[in-house]
Length: 279
Length: 321
Ligand code: SF4
Ligand code: SF4
Image (cartoon, rainbow over all chains, first blue to last red; front, side):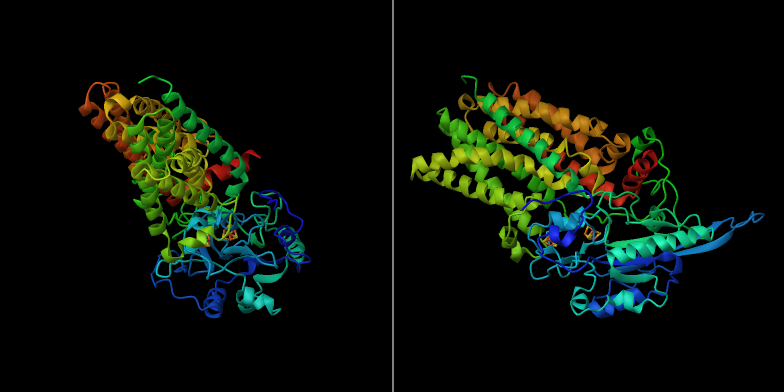
């Protein structure tokens, strides 16, 4: 089967071998209306029966979760910023950015590409899911994800991440986080619709003078072919702990194999040359 | 007001050399890494990189020694190849979160996963080197043993170099951006390692090819390691992305490796005349090869742990476009 490794894809599930799949499912997380209530984190933990990941205080504003990980599939970031907000406000005032992060369900998912067992797979909804009965905990996916999403749970030995509630989608329900979000900061639906809605919201915010609003993950020509989870951010991605321009590592895989092939030939040639002498 | 971290990552951690690099301005979420730290650990992963190289080059050496009638060198090559392949496989299995599921590696063949490709190559190589060594030791089915040995001269060079792709095919900046260097570096290092085994395990009269392999390999290893440390041949933000190879634990290891490899190469020049020199050369080159692998390993870990290596090149790319 021809695997496309990079660039825009018209139909992700079809590319993965499904015939006549349902529309691509996605998230649109509009951080401009997030109130930092963490209902998404709790709903995710409850629905997916995820164990705790420690009860440490981080000292990072209201964020004691820290980051996405094997046992954190939604993570709410809290960023406190002081800056002049209007003319004459030289001391500046505080604004609070809050954003619920999640697996991006990439069009070109590095985690899935590198998984040697086939545990990670593309669902009919074009999402990316780990089959827990297959994963042998090799941890390749952990190093491959350009967003630092998936991780291995050490006491269990397997890799875990957001499934976009695959079990709920199959029953026509929306994922637990989207269901629980009280402000509709997390929206679930067909990705095409979400893309249009995100553009509309961005236009509204720009008209209202929120010039710093921007979309993240909506560009099909970006390094991962666009994501299945879009975000509307109010600052640069790196301020939220997101990579500003991630690229799926397997984009370069053909070139890597070429260099390795050359090196293998050099090695064989080196050994052969060493046998040329009489002694 | 506790706000987001702006600026040069974690202060004080980097070594003295960092002063050569202009301090990179970048933004992050409380200075936290963007990437997950690789779960691969030492000595498993770097040990496997070394053993795969040793086994791959040794099987090739064994096959050619066979073909040119060097019985002792052939035996050394074959035994080294199978022992290193077995030990390397053991390290790989021990690295898994679920070691009892190691056979899941052979459930599918996935060309997009270097680990899948590598598992199949390792399985084939292990079988071939096992058959070839068993036949050489017992004298049973010499013709088949020789054929298996010849086939392992094909799997060997692949096994020794695919590991460069294995670690480069990740989001880890210092590994990914070095995808042009790592296979060649590992090829050189593997030549030197197998040459060392040949010098140590074979009488001087038959070990000429092993000495030449050691010299060739040491030269290649030193050249490519030097390029990697300078960032020569890296396309994006070479100065910054190669910095993990010049700082901290990785730098100390790579420097020690350089000295050991250079000393081993020098001793190899007298290894044809003195058994002591041959053993000393083999030990030094082996130490050098190990230091190289551990150095590369820790450079990758350091580059994943500091968000600057992720954010700065990506931000620069966006600004440029
Ligand atoms: S964000 Fe990471 S874990 Fe999620 S699909 Fe993309 S590569 Fe995989
Ligand atoms: S840890 Fe599991 S899911 Fe991740 S790459 Fe390995 S087998 Fe696949």
